[in-house]
Amino acid sequence: MSEIKVNKISPSTGTNTTLGDNGDKVIVPTGVEQQIKTGADILIESGADINLASGGDINVASGGTITIDSGGTITNNGTAAGFFSLSDLSFPTVTGMTENAGGTTTVVPNTSTACTITGTNFVTGATINLISTTGAILNPETVSFTNTTTLAVSINIPEGSYFVRVENSNGLSGRSSSTAITASNTPTWVTNSGSLGTFAGGTTGTITTIVATSTDASPALTMTATSNLTGSGNNQANCQLTVNTVGTTTTGTIASSGGLGINESVATDYIFTVTATDGTPQSTSRSFTISTSYTIGNSGQFN
Image 1 (cartoon, rainbow, N blue to C red):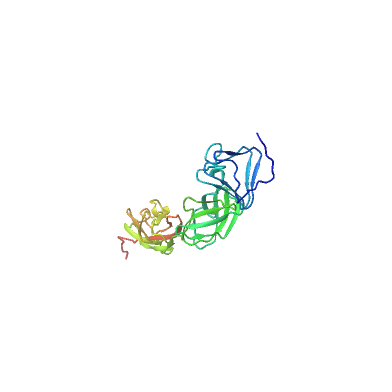
Image 2 (cartoon, rainbow, N blue to C red):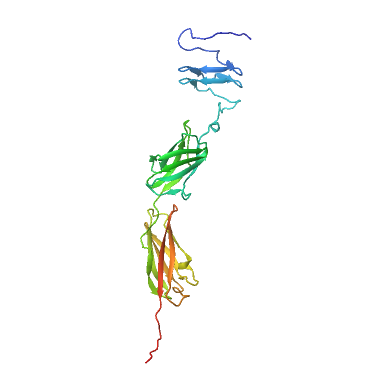
């Protein structure tokens, strides 16, 4: 095998230098490095090959390029995977986002809220985008790197649902596959807390109603009451609570099929709590009182 030792190969005319003929191979042995300096190009034409042996390197300096014409490939051990596959790159992934106070995926709109983003391959200096389902892109108030799987952020966002995108300082990025955080107002009670009225003990049918509203019509609000209202034992009102929603307003009807406060024969105050919950889910609780009264019947007269 012949050997030529030179410090530089330059084209005799023009700007291109050709190594070999069609079908020839340029082999870079183990341990040899090829440096492509700023502004330089290596053009691999159709059908040509450059074989980089184990341990060899091709260093592309800033401004240099490797151009592969149609028909050319970069192969790795005979496969078309190239020098690397996408799996070799440490793209960040976003698996979730929760607010710190309650660990939920819902925050109050337009309020500074501390949250935690979880995922993989996070690095120091990562930037965060909150992408609304409407297309709006917002940024957190603050971002702090905790570790490769956790980022701490403070957000202040308007009502809506948001995807979370993380971009590392090396330009690699990843976005949550579904909306990760929602800003939504909690349900609002229309009915004041406290007494709902006094009713005759043993009354059946509808007793009274309570009302709450939500910012979203769907899914409708649900209402749940403590056993002081729905139970049938002593000091329990023996009532049922059903709800009906029209638009964003939900009405809870309190009724008794077996008789209000049937287990007591004296006036009693039944204090209970009802919780209204929306679909996010966020909830608001309120305390109410229903009182019973009894009249004396079949009384006698004494002279």
